[in-house]
Amino acid sequence: MEKPGNNETIPPLFQPIQVRGTSFRNRVFLSPMCQYASDEGAPTPWHSAHHSRFALGGLGGAMVESTGVTRDGRITPVCMGLWNETQEKGLSAIADIYHAQGVPVGIQLSHSGRKGSSTPPAEGGKPLSSAGPEQAWETVAPSAIPLRDGWPTPKALTEAEIEDLIQAFVDAAKRAIRAGFDYVEIHGAHGYLIHSFMSPLANQRTDRWGGDLEGRMRFPLEIVKAVRKVIPENMPLFYRASVVDGLDGGLAADDTVLLAQRLKAAGVDVIDCSSGGITGASGKSFSEPYPGYLVDYSAQVKREAEILTMAVGVIVSAEKANDVIASGEADFVAIARHHLYDPSFAYHAAEELGHPDPESLLPDSYGMVLRAR
Image 1 (tube, rainbow, N blue to C red):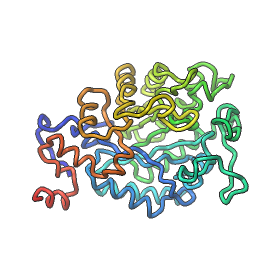
Image 2 (cartoon, one colour; image 1 turned 45 degrees about the vertical axis):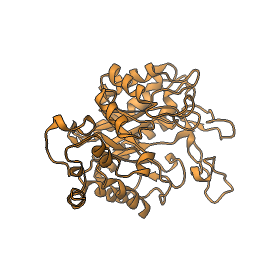
Image 3 (cartoon, rainbow, N blue to C red; image 1 turned 90 degrees about the horizontal axis):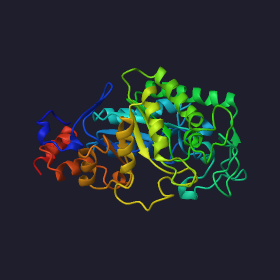
Image 4 (cartoon, helix red, strand yellow; image 1 turned 120 degrees about the vertical axis):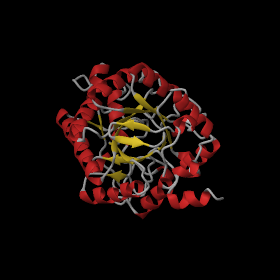
């Protein structure tokens, strides 16, 4: 594991950082990735194998996949959940995998909203059929507006149902604490329920949960305030945002800056800056992805809201990841698909960037052998 050294010789990507009571030994994060392999919301042996690959590779931090706070809050029937003790116990074992290697690990709490009750991407990512082997369930949203043509119309939530869902996030956060997670991320991006409350393209309510930006921010802010009250004071709280919708009439970056300012006041420590997804796939509705194509959003939120940020978006090279941190555009970089390609990205990046002891990022039994390679 990484040992203290001369910070002046350590590349910015590998400088440690403290957020509340959690120390991250470097800025490389495993981004949450849905595995579509859960059993009634609980982890399976696949998840243990999946996360073990990354825990050994030198990460600064990890985030477990989007996890439904209710059964109907899952995206698909095989998505992760955290509404019962079986799931809590299984996720505790996943947290233990990372802790054994000294890696702080968090969990992303979510509700799928109108994007739920769908098949996994490998099966087309389309609405479930009530006639199929997996029964469809009724989806919910701020307004009765379908995701897009061919999708069912969701039920518009009542005020009482909104309050119940806020409590569901609180209950899941309590389970995450008992399961041993070091931090929690609230998923407010990619067209799922919280994001759909924020976006004027999905929220056309006229009560206090809709209307102007102040009303549309109410749901995410009330969730954050409620969760912050029940998690320990020294536990970091992350929030993933789609900074822009990328569609006419949708969320703009200035809207998210204001949200980030309010989230910071409510107790959020880090904004995880993504984009898109309000009518389909995240990040692809307005731009052809290129390395670091979303970093500017992280830089704007960090600069104007004066809050720590995490950058995402095809960050696939050591040089790019290091430049993002060195330039002050973000405080962390989160990497998803490239970690599937290279689970030891952090170690390889440390070598490439001239870290004085890249093997120190690895478990001792690996490091001592690789130093003599």
